[in-house]
View 1: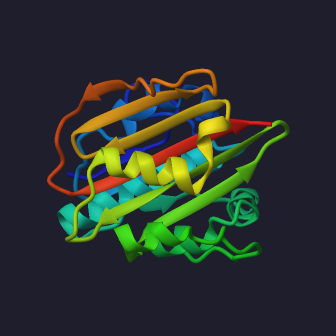
View 2: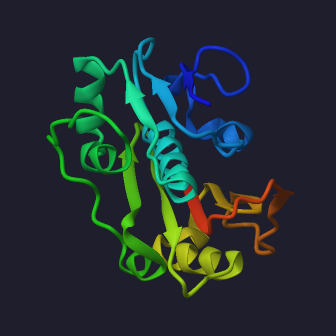
Length: 214
């Protein structure tokens, strides 16, 4: 069955420009919902994009490709949206992970953290960084290699790599069976996560989203 999602209605349909890091946890059930064969996502009504929205789309397409051998198709992409994707440094990932016409890569993607390349397949991983007015967003993930890493190991590696222990913000991690949300606060030494059990994908992946405030 083929379906086209245009992000403007309830459930799976949502406008990517409204997917910001402040409501990252609430989008889990949309972007990690059941994936159908031959999905296509329309950008017809898009006015703006964030790295957060694009990252969700990338990981969904990677999962779809693992499940069905098919990438998600991106349609109705106008020139202004192409320019925005390129400006975010996401063009190379968009070209690689989505079934779409190539988008000009005006900006190079953020350099991949060293430990990330050890955890994920090189051609099936991404990392994006977006500087906002008073904050920084780091998001990425991919398909894990045969040598698995559990969520606890991933949390510790990300905390160390990005120096999160003294930061304020939030930390979100999604695996194939659980989601984890931690509110970054230097005064909180317990590292207590909000955890939800999710529908299990057969694909072993991890996705992270970190926002820190300056």
